[in-house]
Image (tube, rainbow, N blue to C red):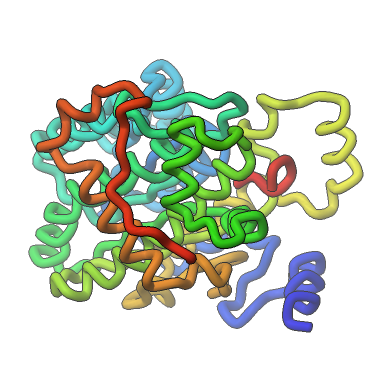
Length: 365
C-alpha cells in the first residue's frame, strides 16, 4: 500500500513531508539555503545531465565549484556555460575550477586529490555524482570491473582522501560538511536476481569472467555499493567526531546521456510512451541539491532520499553487515601499498572477502 501511495504521489507531483515532491526543481530546492558564497563544492560528473544542472544551480547560489573531469574540453565548456549563466566570464572565473580526474583509475584519483589540496581551498561539499553504464565487459587499469570501478570504487577513494580536508574545514569554519552520493533506485535490482550470491562474491566472479557479464546487473551492483558506502561512511564520520554528514539520493527517472548513448527505436518508443513518468533534468537534480544544501538536512546522516524526501532503500542496501564488509574490501583494494599489485592482469586478481549470504533504460540515474 505504501509503495502504491508513493507512486501516486510521484505521478501527481504532490509534496512529501519535506514540502517538496517529484516536480520540485533544483532551483526551488536550494532557495532556502540562501547565499552559498561561503561554500566550496566538488561535483563529479558535472559535464552533462544531472551533474551539470547541480553545478549550475550551486554556482547561481554563489558556491565556488571544483569540477573534476576525464574530458577536460567538456569540463571547460561546462565552466564557460556556468560563468556565462552568471554573467561573470571575467573576474569571477576563479570561482569555477577544472581539474583532471578519471574515476576508473585509483592513481588518477590520488593525483586529483594532490592537485586539489595544493590549491589550499576549503572543502564543504563533495557530490559523488559521476556514473557510467558499460554495455560491454571491461576492467579498469587496477583490474576491477569498469562500472564498479568508476561508479563506486573511485568515489570511495576520492571521499576517503578528502575527508581530512572536509573535517578541517568544518572545524575551522563552523559550517557542517556534507557528502552526497548519487545512487539510483536501480540498486534494488541487484537483490532481485542475486539469490544467495552476495555483492562482493558476484563482483569477484564477474571480474574473473566466471559468470556472464550483465550490464544492468553490474550497474545495479555499483549503485547498491553507493548506498552501502553511505551507511558505512556515516558511521565512520560519527566515530571520527567530524562535523560532516553523508547521505545518498535517487535522482528519479530522467533521460540523461547514459540513455541517449543507447538511443534506438525501442528506447525512443518506450520513452515516448512513458513521458509522463520522466523528470526534467532540473527536477532530477533537485534531490541532490536538497541533500547538499537544504537547512532541513543539517545533522542528518546515513539516509537515502528520493524526490527530496527520506525514503527506504532495498533490504540488502540496509544491511549494516554488507556495508561493513564492503568498506573493509574497499579499504584493502584501494590501499596505496597495493598500487603495484593493482597492475596485475585480471586473471591474477584476487578479492580478499569472506563468503556472504547475504532501470536499465528508463530508470538509469
